[in-house]
Amino acid sequence: MIKYLLALFLLFIPHTFLFAQSNSDILDKLSNDVTIGQTKTTDLEKTLNELDVILKDSSLTTVERLKGMLILANLHKLKGDNKTSLEVAEKARNLASKKRLYLWEARLLGYISSMYRISEMMELSHGKLQEALDTAKKAPESEELYKFYSNAFHEMAYYATNSNEFQEAIAYLEKSNFYLKKINNANSDFLMASN
Image (cartoon, rainbow, N blue to C red; front, side, top):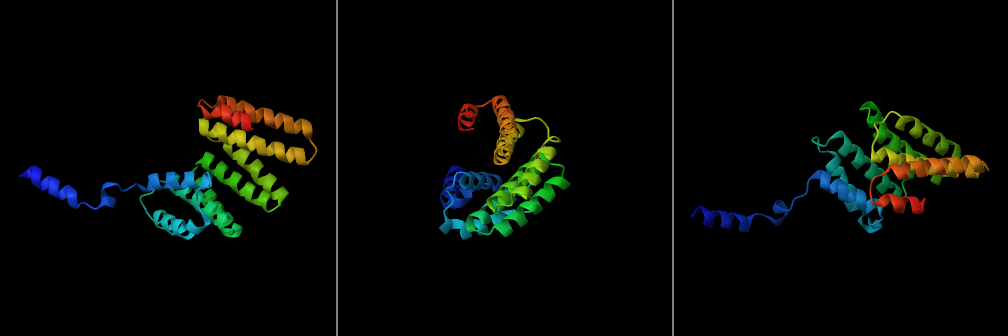
């Protein structure tokens, strides 16, 4: 009888209940979709609304909240709203700073730097990138930190090249490759080749 009731119960459980995703899983999927450009402009409003609901969840960890805010900033950028994108990123950076999550703070400063570079505010962009590198020095050693350094030093090479400081640019690229070599995964060769 119990087996019969259990089987009957399982038949009537809603599909979404059986396959419900955690907010963390949804944030990971959204992050991946935004990063590799799978978010379509037609889906932006739906995705923004979904993300808004997730960010209101008080049970999110600080890291999940920061990830969600970075995704939100990226979605606003994709929507063409750079001002809101910068505001969200700055709010997230302040949260990361307050919680002493230095790698997240550095990532967010890097994002802000990129936004200024896209807007052709090169001095502000360079300054934010330097601030990101200074902040990253406080973060614990990790592969994520090495990935950050690799990207940041590659960006610094860009600024040095634009200033006709070619030897400095080469030194930054060497630093970037140094950190790529410290990454212990299959992607390090790909990252180095694309650097």
